[in-house]
Length: 285
Image (cartoon, rainbow, N blue to C red; front, side, top):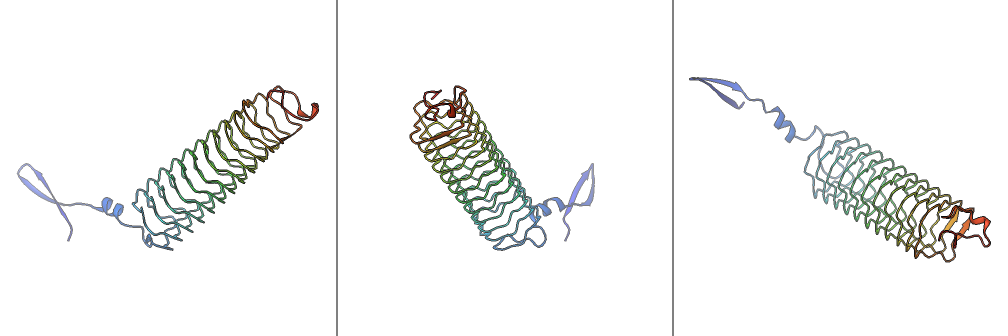
């Protein structure tokens, strides 16, 4: 039975049909899409949906619209979200282990404490996203946009961040040991107190970055641009500074025991190879 709206005009009462199409479509799931394990919801519009705590393991959400959706603490392990839109979505505490998010757009999304171990995050846009305390061990983030993202205390051990954009990102107290950041843009990023042991920073732009009090023992910084960077209090023992620019960098209280300097530009503008032994100690450090 159709609902009838009563429109009162003066003393006359007229019956008119009330269209509920807008509210009905908002409440109805897209045809064929059932949010369940291994469900098929590719290209579905799930914007604003409440899917928190759901078991969605292996679901296909490729190309889906999830803007403003609530996926907090949902289990999305092994799910496919290639090209999905997650602007401002709440994915905090969710399990996205081994999920495929290649090319997804998640600007400003909340992924605080989210499990992303082994996830495919190539070319994902996570600009200004919150990944505070997220688990990204072994994740593939090649070419990912993490500019101005919050990565404080995140686990990025063995993660591949080669070519990623972390300009102005906050990576304080994060664990990036054994991570690969070759060719990444880290200009203006904050790396206060992170664990960087054995991480690869080859050809990385760290100009103006703050790496104070970081644990960077054995870190590879060959070809990196560290001009105007803050290395104060950092532990850089056994680090590699081959073809590295340290021009005008500051390193008050930093430790460089066993570090290798070769053809490096020292803070005072001199070349480490012109010194005997090859070092930047006493030349701005």
